[in-house]
Length: 318
Image (cartoon, rainbow, N blue to C red; front, side, top):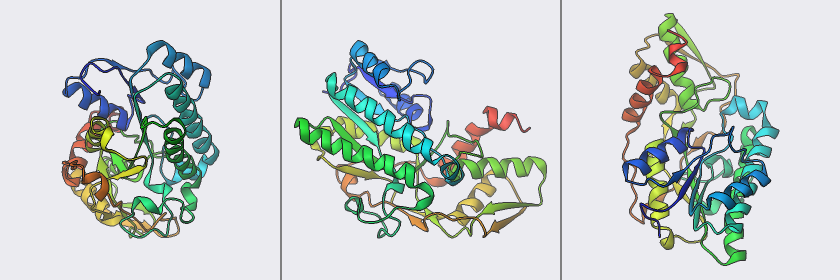
C-alpha cells in the first residue's frame, strides 16, 4: 500500500518533473525517499542499476529521468535520444521486476502519437501512423517504454508498471539551455535576454501557428502521486494527463512577452520548422478517476519566470 512510510525512489529528482514530485511528496508527509544523482548512479548501466535496486529495495518508483529536448536538440542528437532513453528504461524495468518493486510509473510523451492523430488525441491512437520526423527517435524510445510496461504486466501477471503520458511539462528547474530546451523554457529565456539587451525585435522559429498544450510540473507531479495512490483502479494501458486546453505558439509568445516585460517586435522565421501543427491530449480517461490540474497557464508562466530570475541562467545575463 502506498503510504507515508513507503520507500520511494525518485529517478531524476533534480530535473523538471522529478523535483516537482519531490516537492509534492515532501509536502504530503512522505519521508522515506531515496535519490541518486547522475554522478552517483548511471541509469543506462544495467549492472549498477540492478545493484542499487538489490541494495535499496525501493517499493515505489517514479522514473522521471531521461534525455529530453526541443526541436533543435532532437535534430542534433537523434541517436543519443534513442539510446539513452531506451537504455534507462530497460535497466530500470528489469531491476524493478527482478527485485519486487510494488509500482513503477513511467512517463511517455505526446510526441509518440502519430502526427495525423485526431485532436484531442485519445490513447488508442498509439501506433496507428507515422510520428513527427523531427522527434522520431525520442518518440520511438517512449513508445518502447509504454509497450514495455504492458508487456511486463502481461508476462508477470501484475499491475507493477504504470504509463502516464503528459503533454509539454514546464515549471521551475526546467532546462533553459537554448540548444536543448523545449519551447516554453526557450521562449522565456529569449524574451528575458531580449528585454535585458534592449532588442527592438526578436526572431522566433516557425510560423507561430502550431498549437500546444502545456502542463505545469506541479500538476504533473500531483497526477503522478494520484496515479500511484489509485493504481489498483488503473488498467494495463497508458493514460494521457493534461489540461485539455491548447494555445498557439504565437499566443504563448505574446503571453510570455507581457509577463517578462518585453515590448519589442516579434518576427517569425518561416524558413524554420514548426513541428507538429497541433498537439492536445484527450485526458478524459484519467480525469474520470477524479484528478484535475490546478495551475493556469498564465500563473504557471509567471511562477516559472520568477524562478528563472533567481537561477544561474538569468544571473549570467544581467
